[in-house]
Amino acid sequence: MKGSTYRRCSCRDPKTGKELGSSCPKRNSRNHCTYSIRQELPPREDGSRRSFARGGYASLKAAQADLDHVRALMALAESDDPEGVQLIAEMLSEVSRDKLPLPDIEETRRRLNAGQDLVGSLTVNEWLDRWLAGKRIRKSGVSRYETDVRVHLKPHIGDRRLDRLRVSHLSEMFTAITDANAEILEQNAQRRAAVEELATVPWKGVENRARRKAMKTAIDAMPPFRRVTGPSTRQHVKATLRAALNEAIGQQIITFNPASHVEIDPVRKPKALVWTDERVARWQQTGEKPSPVMVWTPEQTGAFLDFVAADRLYAMWHLIAFRGLRRGEACGQPWSETNLDRHSLTVTGQLVQDGWDVEASEPKTDSGFRVVALDDDTVAVLERHRKQQAADREEWGSAWVDTGLVFTQEDGSWLHPGKVTDLFERLVAASGLPPIRLHDLRHGAATLMLAAGIDVKIVSDTLGHSDTRITRDIYQSVLPHVGKSSAEATAKLVPLQRKAEAEKAARKAAKTAQKAKEKAKAQAKAKKNKARKKPKK
Image (cartoon, rainbow, N blue to C red; front, side, top):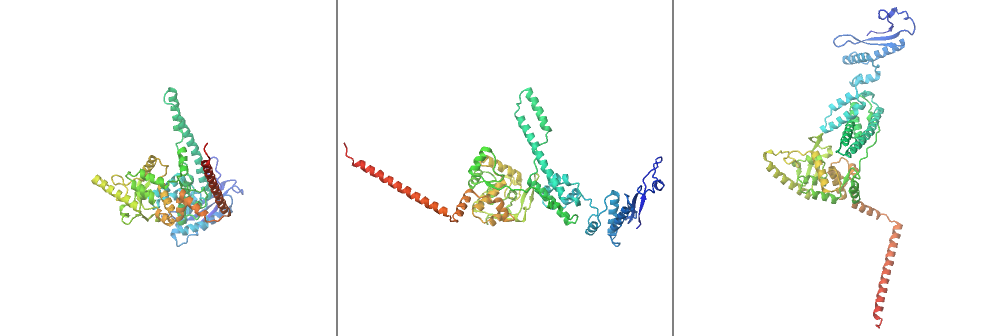
């Protein structure tokens, strides 16, 4: 197809305003004019003509190089590939119209062979929207991805081209998030101080009322209380982006995933601590928990279960405390998968929250599908609960909602997991016991099983973990008496000379003390006998 380079003069007639073109008196000057190129492109499907045009080249050599580049791009599509010819022509037409840099020849060849867009103008925003639309996971999982995309990814990197996203861009994003955290903490502190100061101003008196009004106006003008983006959330944002970019690699849209290489602060998961007497005393003095994850001792667990024995959901608290079901699993457990005759139940589903809405879902992982053995006492508790539920069904009559679940509201409808958590927290507060979360009952169940000497594999299977390392790392909170016993057993295995000498010295001291005691006893007896033999005056 026709193509050429040519000189162009942009000088205009001062009177008419028209370009002088070849009549410009300076045209023959060596550096006066610029060079342009024009290359005919294959016609559109409707037969209309189109071309690639570009100007402003300082030399003929530069213009010819770009013309050769355009022709090399056109040659990528074979003549017997009409679709490829049209794709290349559309790409060059768009590059010419938008004055974009000429695409790399080898990269364009790769994109053409892979069936990708030839002009890499796809933004991170556009790809994230496409990726989210294609997700086929439970609604709550998609909602979490959408939150990461809306709150963090789109505002920071959404306008960047997907194929030009770099590790440095992500580092800048997480640095900006950290800086925003510092600003949020400062603004929260300012607002909190103002609210506390407002609480000290009396209500009565004209001056006090005016002061309160001014302070309220100032508080309303402050940013509202906000949560910071913690390490766990930042890791989740990174994981969301990494998953989205991995799919882009799978579709051969990009070849490199910068989210796999950006470094951010690691998440240190809090270890579960047991509420010992010393920690309870400290909590009573300060109101502070030693760790976000706290576990009751067996005595404290028993005290709580005794306190809530009359609660309508006692069987749920009992089941979580001893068998470690998750909140959603307990709320969604059906009677059809609860075999009390065989002392077992099968976890096949759960109720999960999406915002405040509740939906039925499968367990989080394949290992969540599991059979959980039940002890005699738990079976008896569930049997009493089933009788009470049958009585409730009769009382509600036709208004009863037959969900088939073990734990329900009074009318048989679904329990709301969020309301279950609120109820548990109120019961714990009323019991006077040190605070734990509902999920910490699950921690406690794992701790009790491990303390009872149950093999960690059985504990892991009961809890629905995919790996026993998860069980060891998170749930193995050793109870004080178990730790003391293991320490003593360990110490006895190592023979130490100083230990033998100490034991020998202790025996010698005990023997000396015994002799001294016997001697003192003999002296006292002799003195008593002497006093008896002394004649009376």
